Length: 638
Image 1 (cartoon, rainbow, N blue to C red):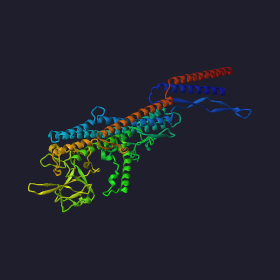
Image 2 (image 1 turned 30 degrees about the vertical axis):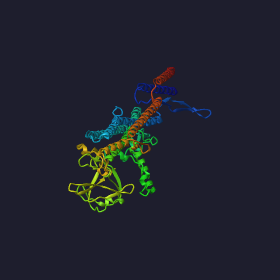
Image 3 (image 1 turned 135 degrees about the horizontal axis):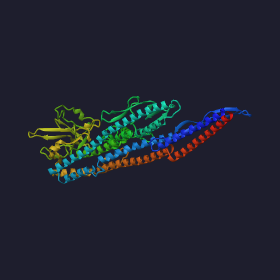
Image 4 (image 1 turned 45 degrees about the vertical axis):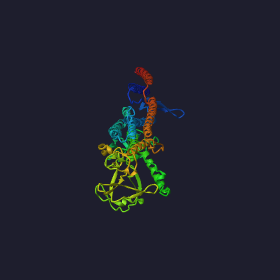
């Protein structure tokens, strides 16, 4: 009797197991189209065995007590999950770089047929007209207005680049907020999963699906790794900093860089400081090219760049003294500094598409401006130890303050070439008037001397350094035009798009434009000198402007420089587009493999449903058989 009742319970266990299988299969079928759902599977195990008796050979004779569902597990491949997270994150990173390159092309008008190249051409055209007729006041007015338009257009482009940089703050802030929300939600699911699974009876599979979906989304924002503990909770690390620990989440925040207002991302409450290491260029090997947030930070850069961010390689001829002796030690020191500067450039300015294009574009404008200014107000370099002050003992600045004359007898500096410089068409034949000015700093510090001073030219001949003027009463005045060198640590002292303006003196009086020969030269046909000046400027358009990138020593003229700058932008954008296509294909391939493992196949589940239905029917018939046996036994025994 007892054995039959045991068999009866064995059949009931079969019913329960089959019913559980049917429930799981139905749940799978109901979620065929549910995003993030993971296929579930029943794990069946034997219940314990009951010893009946000892056999003749001494072994135990046992009878089984049926089956039970030990777990309803999710079918996932953790390796595929991690691969998917990595590749979708990398795709998101390059999508941001590609998007940024497209925005920059729009700013330059390269996609709308309004290229900045047209402004360069207009400036060249008006200089060609000036070369034919420099004495025409209308032509001079046209030249100044074209130069002004050229500068305004360049500054408008530069400002748009800066504005676009700052606008990325909003996107950074939104992504940081979303990452924090994801962290808080994962922490919530951790607590719920641990609570439900604490008894070891039930698996919180739906919560696990929701948590996995959040991990998939988090992967598009940033690189991370995670691990699960014995309670079912996960610990998530972003860039090796703890983000979620069981039921606790830590938060990222945005802090403004005081110098430019850019956001930087920092940990607010776990003591790790900066969330991302931006000291080195992004690298696939180090997995620093993962996530759209890092993509935005990389594309934007950490500063508003200018021409001074592109290092210039030292030239050997600059280290040869008057006697032709090459200072090899000084050259090696300069070369080492240059190589360090190139490395820094690659990790900062060159690592960001925006800062790189800012620096390259500003360098183009700086060199155009410098070339034009130096044509109208040419400088000569003076070595202080070769200056002869003669009887000059006193100098006075334009502010009426005494000038320290010892500054003229040491080091190197530049002064206006008062003998060879052209003069304005005004009555005073003004010299030293530049076309493009630094907003706050004059081109020259004008120093009034009580006599003439002399320097040496390249051949060692004495040359006067101060302009001599004589008033109506025969009084002589000597004015030294000491060039205010650019200071790359102060924007106001640089010919950069951040601080340049068209010379207001020129826009007020076009006759100040130097288009005549200096009387000191004693030339006939004063305006013919102006023709030659503009011809020289036109020819200089075909001279080397400099290198576009310190990693390549290829040098370009003005037009080719711009062409290669925009071409380089297009090449990088195309490379990133190809990378996006590759990563999309790779991520889709991995997702297909994930779905083969974790996805629900309706055909397969229908087969399982039939299997469990047959198992249920078999268990039911087994129970009916045991029931009939019990009924017969009870009736016959009375």
